[in-house]
Length: 333
Image (cartoon, rainbow, N blue to C red; front, side, top):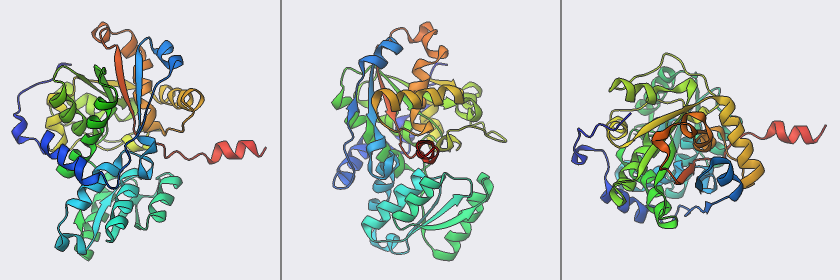
């Protein structure tokens, strides 16, 4: 799929200026995460790989960047009543932590099937947890009720210009840390991260290739790119709990125009990539975070001649909030 450059960047929800402003705004709070390399993984992939370790970000995931930018963009009158969102975990924890830093309440609607470790993070950071059914409709209805009850400000996990700008700071750091990168592979769900990453990266280097990595059981972005319009799925089924959301009206135009292709992988490939991160890089990465490595190692990438010139590949390891209870229990046996 080739990008369809039909939309002016003036009409996007963010741009390189708002991303640079976000970088200044969040600098006192967010970590500049390291970039790791591995000769072993380079050999397996047949390319030079660079891993941007957002699993080391505050809150354990990239989401803190956008949440922090959004929270500290609010004026005092807006901030007083707090913020509300619905999230399966990482945005919830990030928003809770950013709200705590600003001293305002955060009301977090979390589906009842969210990973326990992510719910624990929200509570650890002082978020007020409201449980909903797993469906997106239930999550949105519950969040709307909280909005009516509290008067708080709704901050979407992805479909928000402040969020997109915050996530775009990943590119500013990454391309400074590894300027030779010619391709970026980024997980895709609601599209907030890849939108910000693409806007910043293409502003810095217009020839850079931006590839999305998506699970087979939640491949709405792949279908949306194929159909030329937002396509939502009736149900999703993937181990990657952070990649079950759909593109929004603000993220879709950027994904449509600036994301060069979507690589779809199955859950077994994601699990194998998690294993490699743990065994080779020596870091714990959640399924949603490992999908970029899964994409690079997939047949869909390795055997496609279109990608033969992708030699220096930046992979965003987007989060490390994985429930390791099963692992620890195995040591007790």
